[in-house]
Length: 637
Picture 1 (cartoon, rainbow, N blue to C red):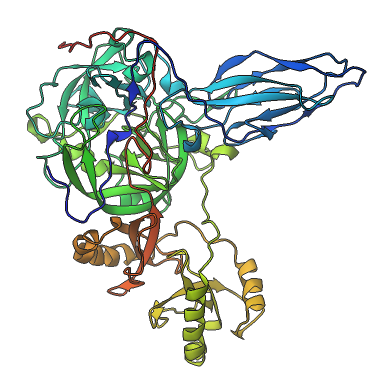
Picture 2: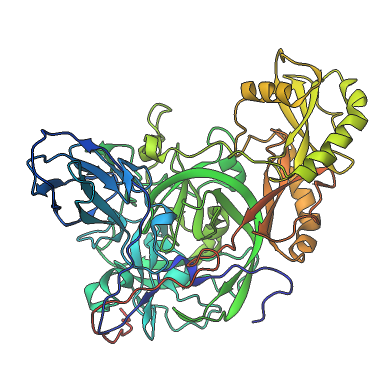
């Protein structure tokens, strides 16, 4: 199937992990990022330190857990060392931290920056530096793994590594995440993606129905199917090419007797901690929430997921109704796309670290109630995307038109006990404010000229207390006319753009400076206003207004070169207002994107292409492993 013309397409490899099997040698790509360590203070002494031995020399550590290291300095009685993680004293939340006593605490989730360009193990380096002689050092390698990657015994908990047993092609094998448990007419099924459970089947003629679904996935066991355990068999899937709109990437696998936890528990998704580690927990049973319900009160878009690669991550929904195209591949490891799927109703979650390769199939739930919102399947360097659960479950009607429901808990937590307790931990709390942006000089000059021309007219509006020029957060890099308005004032007559320049509204009371502001006065007022949020609750009627504009213009916008996707979000420049979310390829021209369309603000989000196995333009992730490849046979239970 040809790619749609003039639409930047989303590469697929589908958040499955690609592992390259090479018999003679093992090539491991050791990731190096920053980390933290402190100074270990012990008594001084004579002698020149000649080396340092760190014990243990290697360790595997899960998120939330710890590992003690010791250092022995040779050639000196001064045994004091400075501890580093990946070259940074003391470590960081990204790579883990290390104390002055050598106690290493792993990060609470695996950041995308730590995942190698190949699917080599995710590692950080612990270094001890002699305080007697800084050239004398020793190191140890920590391999960061997640609970989700480990082989389980007995009835497995979900949010774990898995996939179809024959997802291999030549020297490659692929895996994803077994996301959640659903039930229909008394039968339980594992819910995950088509590309995880059904080899990206484009039509209903796939020979894989009935084939074994295993835990862990092939990627965890060097592509050896004999080292996995069957936990389900492929039952049905949504055909990616021939299925109706709205398209989804989903499949069901009938559970093998005794193989899956019948309560629907998902790793790390619980309400309690054991030794600082979140316990497994079930999502809320039922049909889940629509995206509109999830972004409204009391959930306010706060979501979580538990996936194979990055573990438990927490963030905020940034967009709904996102339309975009995804290129699919016929076989694991293929270099050329076989067909393209046009998605019309995706949920976008803020943050490139919310998911990574191998997290496909994860269930996205609300943080406060663990209600299902979406089924994750792709991402970029800024956001992750999934199919709304309200689109997924109705796509699998059974006898009597009965649709599946999520298996889980029927109880709701109190406000004091959030359902996903891991998201309350400091290291996992979602970032809620936007990063600082800076407008280019040319844009500042244009906005200043427009402001000066219209200042008296603007200040005649009783709601507007002061006028200045600053940065737009709806279009980073562009300037905006800043309008400092009184809280509770009517903003109905305030324009969204003036002569093509965006306006940005900052609400507050008793502004210290009023009128036409200079740069210093403007900065003073902004310092009291606080950082803008990534998303804001929408005022009543705003979503429907945005949906009307989205429907009218999405097709034409996607035809423009460089535009990756179009959805609905909240404006940052005008809190409470909706905006048309426009994903644009990083580096692509943006001058053709208007500041408003049919009276609706636009919000430009520069990103790499959405993919499910590759981020941006890096090569496909792969890893050589020192085992002989065995024949992967289909099992038809």
